[in-house]
Image 1 (cartoon, rainbow, N blue to C red):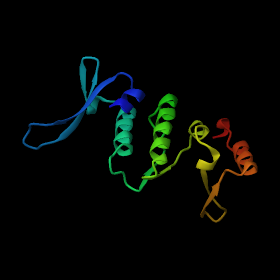
Image 2: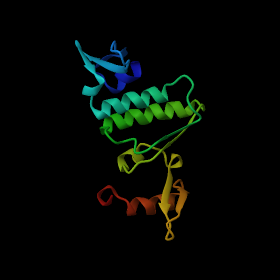
Image 3: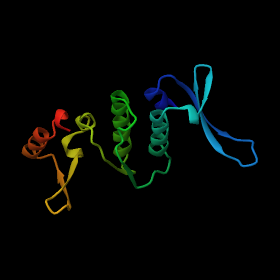
Image 4: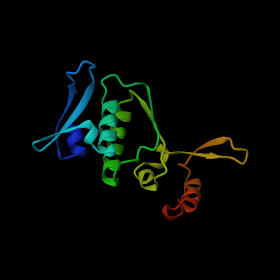
Length: 149
C-alpha cells in the first residue's frame, strides 16, 4: 500500500473483496478519501499500476517478467516512479525484467547499458544491439528523435 500511495497519493486503501453471490468473484476496491471505488470504475492506468505493483512486489517473483509497452495508460510522472520501482526489484537479483517501449521519454529514464535495441534487418529478422556504444547510441538517437517517432 505504501508504494501504491507513493505513486497514487490519493489512494487511502486497497483491498480485495469477495462477492457474496452464488458465483463467487474476487474484486479489488480502492479507497479515495471516504469513497470506496470498485475496480470496474477505476481508470485503466490505475488498474495497470495495481497489477504491475502486485507482480513486482510478489514475495516469490518469477525469474523472468516480460511487460510490453509499460508506458501505456501511465502519465510521465507515474512512468518515472514505475521505473524506479522496477530498478529496485531488479537490483535484488531475484528476477530479470524485459520491457518493450516506443516511448523516448521512457528510454530517457534508463541508463544506456540497460537498453537493448531490437530492429529488423533487411530480411525481416530481428537484430539485438546494446546501445551502450556511444556512436551507436548517437546514430540511433538522431534517427529516432521524439519528433520523428
